[in-house]
Length: 269
Image (cartoon, rainbow, N blue to C red; front, side):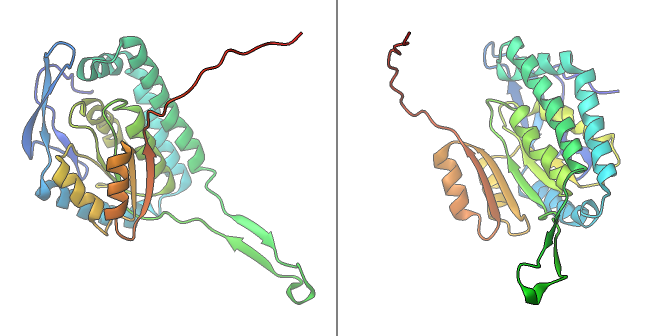
């Protein structure tokens, strides 16, 4: 049974446990000022615990069978679908998003987990014939794919569910652990998803969902224990993070507001 989010206190999800650690963080409806709930903003100590847990858990997630990853992701997809109306209401209350748009975002989140579960069964390699000349007759090449390591994910406020699960679900599908920094303005919907993740058999510490302030998030960006940084947000922030990310791989999804010129079209015939 999940916990109703109604102007109460919502714990954060740290290394496979729901904890009330860090600095209290009020989440208010931007349209009305209503207090939706109070959660917590992780600091350096909480991030360090989550990072250590992600490194340890990766030793297990990388060895999970495809079917185990698929089953965990399918469970989350099912739970999102089961509680779609409640999730949409929560999303509207904490983000100010119209309920129609919130329902669409919830449906997309379920689809993302379900699709990631299917991809967990299809993360294959390649078999290549190498008999391109006489000296390599009878030889073949095998390409295998391996999970990269612990992932640091940072998602934005405008799609607090959809753009967050686009980081969490693929990480699990690939066999990676992940620490997600959801937006501090509307983190509650992903903390609800944490409950669904906690119901699975994923290794303890495989996922942490921690609202953070900017300095704490920047420390995660620079931490070499994370092998990939996935960030969605503004170009100015994203390119700065890439410059500070060190040797880790970086995946950026950056916004823009480029101008466009519309011309009248003339249809022939």
